[in-house]
Structures are given as structure tokens and as C-alpha cells.
Image 1 (cartoon, rainbow, N blue to C red):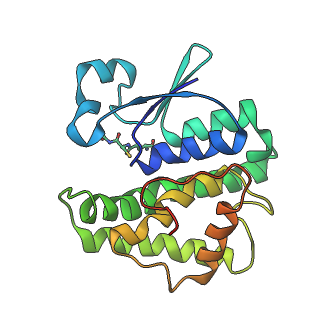
Image 2 (cartoon, protein in one colour):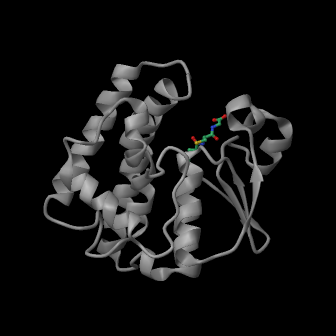
Image 3 (spheres, protein in one colour):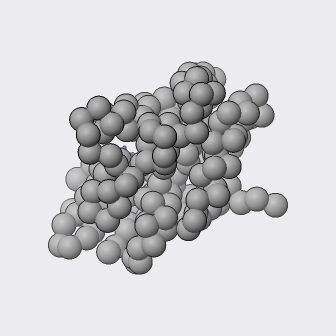
Amino acid sequence: MKLYDNPISGNCYKVRLLLALLGKEYETVFIDSLNGETRTPAFHAISPRGQIPVLEDQGERIADSMAILTYLARRYGPQWLPDGPLACARVIEWLAVAADELQYGAAQARRIKKLGVAGDLTRAQMHAESGLALLEHRLEEHHWLAAEKPTIADIACYPYVALLPEGGVPLDPYPPIRDWMARIEALPGYISMPGLEKE
Ligand SMILES: N[C@@H](CCC(=O)N[C@@H](CS)C(=O)NCC(=O)O)C(=O)O
């Protein structure tokens, strides 16, 4: 299995985290996404969307962190994606939050504040906070986002929530979210990424 990857990408980290929790071995190909390598013809031949992560497995390429999490769960860890119609929809609801409030809010705030990309920081932080409100509401009453056990919904949402302090949004006002993060960090096989290391 091969992952086109960058260590500082939260979207790539979603995939590395699930692979670690599944105990799967893989190789990585470093893609310098901050310096335009995703926009080269060579990379577009791998991923027409010009984005990482991309996973290669069994002769197939899969692009997009959410698609890769879905693939990995179905193929190697069905417990991470329940297959009942409603249970599966509950997971997808959170993948949609990861692709909206967390991508265009939380990840974007970090890109602007930490990585120096141009953009409207206040707007991104406000969008991130609307995502935090959704998580907080759910996590006040439940341990996990989509079910009564961890699923790829938790893996999809965790990275950019946990990295939010790098986007200038502190998580101190959200104890249920911090408790949920601690539960994820206690899962057997959990790995960290730059920006999330504990002292
Ligand atoms: N929806 C995509 C977003 C992927 C994404 O934004 N990737 C960033 C790195 S975190 C990237 O490749 N940026 C380079 C570019 O857009 O040129 C996913 O979930 O995988």
C-alpha cells in the first residue's frame, strides 16, 4: 500500500491515523504540497484533482481523505463503518462536517495563521466555531460522533479540530470536545502528527 502524503497535512494524517489504528503497513511518497508539487503535470497524472492524500492499494488509486477512510474501513476494518442504512448515514453526516466546517473553517484558519496562506482568518475561524458547536452538542451526551463506538467519523473530524489552536481557536472552552480528543488519543495504535505532540 502506498500513500502520497505530507506530514503536516491534516487530511493525510486522517489516513495515517486510521492505517495505524488498523495496524496496516504502507509506504509513503512525500509530496511538497505547500510548494506547488500537487499542481505539476506529474502529480495530476496521479490525482486529477491535484490534492493529497492519494492511496494506492491492490492496483487501484483512491483520492480524497474521506473516500480513503471509507475504502480502508470497508476493506480492512468494517467495525469503523457500520453498514446499516441509518448507522452508515450517521457516519456520512460527520464526514460532511469534516468536508465543510472543518475543511473550510478549521483547516483554512490553520492554513492562514500557521502556514501563511492568504485568506480571511476571521471568517474561517467563525466557520470553524460553527463546526465546534455541532461537535460539542453531540459530545455533551455521547462519547463518539456517529455511534456508541469510534468510527471513521471520529477519525475524519479529529485532525483539524485538534489542530485548531494553530488556527488561533483555543479548545479550552469546549471540555466535551477535549474529552473526546483524549478518548481518540487513548485508542490502541494511535499516532500523533506535527502540531499535536504532547509535552
Ligand atoms: N477534500 C480533500 C481535501 C484535500 C486537500 O485539501 N489537500 C491539501 C493538503 S491538506 C492539498 O493537497 N493542497 C494542495 C493543493 O490544493 O494544491 C480531502 O479530504 O482529501
